[in-house]
Length: 455
Image (cartoon, rainbow, N blue to C red; front, side, top):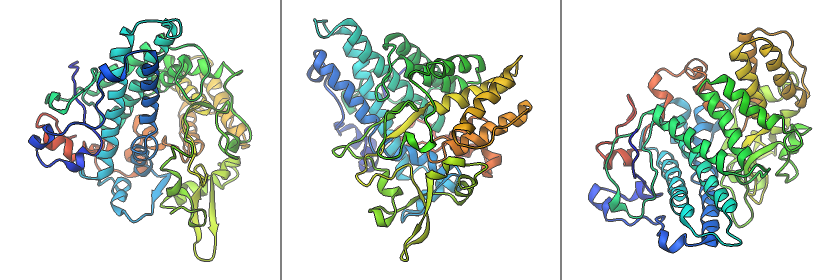
């Protein structure tokens, strides 16, 4: 695997007209390690900056999530920028602005992690900056870097692997992409390092050993390593003092709630750092645009008592005379735009384990898988399923994932990893299962090849 130094910064995609002009631009997010990471205090500040980058409106705060939202069938775009509908139609072109916005911000986040991973281990210890605390900060950076590469891999395929911080645009070499296998190998290596370094405590807004193990469960599910997925999901499920399915369903997000036992890892916002999501989901009566909405199909499933159960709380219809019968998603509802983003919930670990058990299908596995699936259904106040074979059980897990995470960024990636996206979403070409590399990136680097069949 060729490991490289490669980093593109937010907004450059819209400002560059040639390779020479690119090389003349000093990246606004470049960080001088001599200035910014010199002691324990500045190291802690740098790690807080990593989480800030992760929750940026260009990453999980908004733009990156749109790529998965609109590519699947749970969430639709009804705003003025109709080009976003090319994601839903699977005709998206590489010059779609949100592609570059998300791509650049993921790499900006990686660059921040690289500064911490490279510089913090060499800082001198003090009475307050202990070895354990230093390990924690570096472990958090490894975790976020793993998440970022995981997101790149599952969205675009193999990508450039950046393991050193970039300090100037002129230092960027032109190199080939790594393979998908090598990109996922880097994810695993970073997660294993994070698991080793992080403390074994519960924190729902910063990474710990438990957070790393939860993401490892998801990673192993994607890799079809069923036994490891079961093992790592069980770490969280069995820690029922700290993690559980809270009831009723809406109680993990409603009434301005956050940090419940349902949450393994979430991104928090406040009035000084608001989310870009809410204004797009909220109705006009609540100061929003309702440009992002539940699809009619998911609305119908959620309001069906036998399917959605208590999850019907996720959706509603407007009743005003000026804007009647608009479908509204209620996960983002706070008029002050402080809704958290739920990246890993306890419910996901139950469904990961259920799917992995059904796929492994060893002695007692189907019974255990059904129990995990029914735990999710029971919390949603719907009837448990009984006596399913492996194929029927796997379909039931897919169906449950769809409604359980109806307004979260799961559906597109679930269909991709199970090989079901083309059939379910009626996608004509296998090439459309990856998104195009942003045009601006390909145009400035002749060695960066576009995904096959895309332009």
